[in-house]
Image (cartoon, rainbow, N blue to C red; front, side):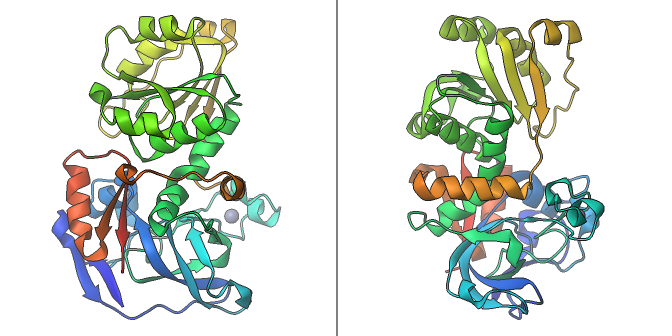
Length: 350
Ligand SMILES: [Zn+2]
């Protein structure tokens, strides 16, 4: 089969398009013919370059990158329902260990030994990928493979952030970093819930895409008047912030515009500027505000997300997904490194 193999860390060109053996599913696993594989900014690009502080150390070279994907189940291992054969599926990358105390106590969402497809094992930048059967979910009929891969990557995380912040119809939801992969899905899901979305992007870029996804207002992240603008827009302040960039200079300008009983969720941070955010505890409790952290990989939200999308299609506009053929994986990585981080990047094997 065709696969993108990395023999060393370095520039995008280390991603080599090669012919390798098709892997075989073992007990409890499925073989997925990949329709589209998601390209993750921090995980994949940071691992390939060697700059990610954690993942490169976990990889055995040569290696095939690639986590979340969509495709069709073409073989099943021992113990897996053969009814899955021929099913269009999406695949999650985080995999619970199955043997730790949390997994044995039937609370795998608290697993302390989560591994990632595409890091701890060979990934989906390939024509075929092996996955634990527990990582796949049916792909809704309305969704293309490219949409399936993009939604699988960050949809469940976006849903969890909106759930832990108890986002309600009519709430003002502020989304810093709105043009990225997680941000676009937070915007779309918050709008789907009936919230009023304020998207923040550098220079107001991708404004037209964000409005298509449901943003009511798009503001410039760097606007010095952001605090006053948010208060003027909402009257009482923003009810919810879903902040996946956690930039100090931005926090200082939106925190004064968080409403009474405001809720703020974090699930990531921008690379580079990683200064801690100062929290004035007095202001936090007098405002009765809530801060919440969310991490990728809670299988309950993977289930909830795909169940929700079966009856409520979340079609992504073409401009939200950059599709590259598999053999141009290096070009996709190069474009992300050049600073184009709007929307989602996927590789297609066909
Ligand atoms: Zn576990």
